[in-house]
Length: 450
Ligand code: ADP
Ligand code: MG
Image 1 (cartoon, rainbow, N blue to C red):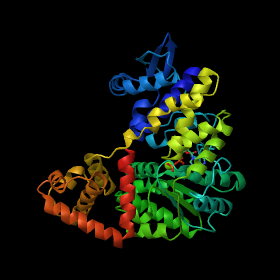
Image 2 (cartoon, helix red, strand yellow; image 1 turned 60 degrees about the vertical axis):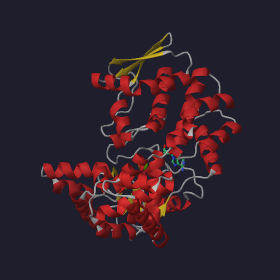
Image 3 (tube, rainbow, N blue to C red; image 1 turned 45 degrees about the vertical axis):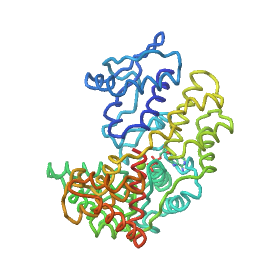
Image 4 (cartoon, rainbow, N blue to C red; image 1 turned 90 degrees about the horizontal axis):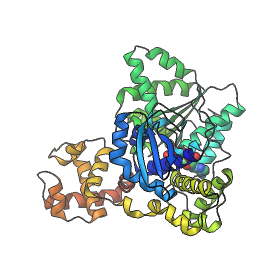
């Protein structure tokens, strides 16, 4: 048991610091094969992973292991089948978080793709998520009759997936005759691509068209994918006309999703829009209390308050912190005291990983507007590029206090006058256009998160 828990704690920590795609690629099917005299043998599925983990992640894996158990002095990697039975999933976006591993008895339902661990009962409500929660609850009682579509949006790790799946699970529980389907937008997209390639579009559509409650998670993923949007639009209309319930989540509001067909945008805006924001301090403590109860962890109030004041980013991080402490408690047989907690959570509470750099700004602006970094930097005068470029210049000035000549030099063929012009233009625009302000907030969030 201990090996598994230790590795889960490592995964929980690693996951916070790397992208979901990297996490799924390099940590899928890994585990601890054995621990002997301070030496940890990590099992990996193939030689490629072995080399990569050894080179790129060795230091952080060791650090985390050592912080959880200071007897550990060495880490090595062996190719093996997984020693830890991790719930295996094919795709990155379906990867179960280590937090979920704690609830490993919950299996995703094959037909609906819902995970029963997400319920209304274990969802904490505060002012930050009151509206989406109320709407979700109402929809689960009377699908198709109240808010259609229900569109829930907000930053990562704030409970969108939880809420969406809670609706699905609630419907399954109370309205057994309803057909529910949960699909991450990315999975929906690969379904469309597969069906087109294999000339199975008709059966793909038929399958969706008989659903009573359709849940599409992370719909921002459809940005720029025209064919998928088109197919989704048709399925949406068919279901909508039959008063079937459609529930959608996104990391931003419909108007801030770039390259989204106007007709889809207006469909999304035609129902109920509800955003989740971040929980305040008191709500963070409440969430921690609820999760420690659920998992029978014994943590004193000062510890919970320490976590709540230092881990502020999102609820997923709060869970990550609890995972570390849970692993410690299980290994040591006692709850960590406040000093130990400070040590255990040091890497999570340090602000150092959240500094912005000019390159991060450029990268995130490009990615937000669905452009290549090089398009943003080069001298193109296309309107779709000029505006994002001005935004990048504005952010370099506002967030990093870069000098005008420096900003000019970052973009080929531009000088300080272009930078000054761009910055004053965007400054004015923000005052007149709240949508732009919202976009900038999202970009900034990504810059500081990555
Ligand atoms: P998102 O989809 O917005 O990125 P998730 O729904 O995956 O976020 O939430 C991240 C983690 O935090 C999940 O493990 C989820 O169960 C938990 N969580 C989020 N919101 C709440 C809440 N209000 N109450 C309890 N747990 C929550
Ligand atoms: Mg999600």
